[in-house]
Length: 563
Image 1 (cartoon, rainbow, N blue to C red):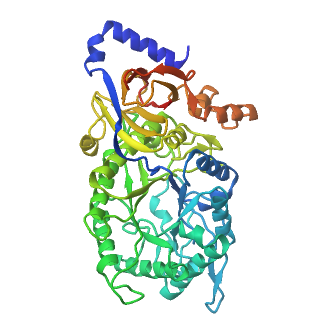
Image 2 (cartoon, rainbow, N blue to C red):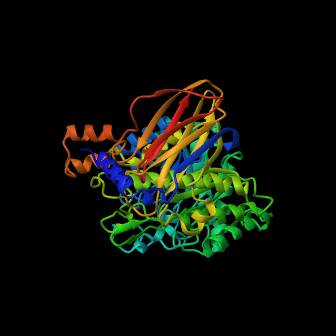
């Protein structure tokens, strides 16, 4: 008997003998109104990032990038750290290098773009757009170059990573010239039109130890970098500041000061008022913990980071319409910290990560609507870690070339197009509740995100709770209104313990660290998005359709209606 069958059997026993316990929460209902449009189904989810740029052109990196490009109806954007770091291109956790800039003994610059080209060529061939991060500081330009290359490993002090690359330049004119030469090179390689479609952003989390200078020095470094970008291509788009913790005191203070510098500060290069800013960015993170040996997620800090960042950008008339990118938007803050050293990160392999992703992105759309900001993207800082143990518990989308359940949420998002429409649910937690206390207590968050396009509609549903507990879930009664057809075909896609879940299949194999070729093929197949049963044809009565599903706890389903 499958695990889901066992869950369902136990659920029915509880229903038979303890009906008051089941229905104390009330029957779960979802109502979708296709006439009530709430906004565009902007693919804000089609943005990804990671620390290790050299993984880009490696075997599993290229495979995952191809999958991301294939699942998205628009070009995916990629943001990576360490693009200007000095080194031999060796890939390591939280490290990467391109050796783009070195100097001869007399200080004459040497530019070498072959590793940067390997990274960007991989993107461009797949139709992916770089969200090009300007950083970090090359060793020859660092004002405090030693030590430079770190060798951090999970379990070590995180502060080990902050070395010579995190310091201001020793020569701001050489820094500006480096950025000018870089952008000029990209225009020559890919053409003006292509590079005009990119966004460039300067640095990462300058309000914490990623920047070892002062705030004033950051603004100076930013001005010189932005000047180099615009000098190479006047129509290029550049921005920042990618602060950590949009709702933290240091994050809010830094973001406000950055915007005010760009609006009314004296530009360190030109001496004039103002600095170019075409995109504004900040980061948002949740905070899982371990309670009695079980993971407990906490979405509230992430939602508050986003809310406060949006409020700050919207509070200035000069920036309220500028595109915003949440440069990292994740359940917590360290992608390379696996569950062996950080047991609170044990949510990452299974469906907990999937349901959290679905529920949190829905709230991001809601926040952007309510605060009327121009949200362009929310970067999931999740990629892959080359040649690492199987299902080690990194925050990644695949392991050794096998897709994890969370990647299938993005495959679902890729099918959602057109206009977002109104959803009401009697068990869908209010946005303010999520921001205050996440999803605690008896009731799970049973919610939905819905969209409509020509002759089709999609409804993503989740059954999420902070506590990492699995069960058979609950019946959800769904009503879809104002369907402009007399009949529809419904296809149901599922992510749960039995569907679209390579992790459960791997565990049933005995959790092999050296799986056979046949096992790898089976895992690759299990990692794909699955349809439950066969598509059903259903009649629509006066524009209304009623249907029901049983959605397991921490599961995510997508209903696709075609007519």
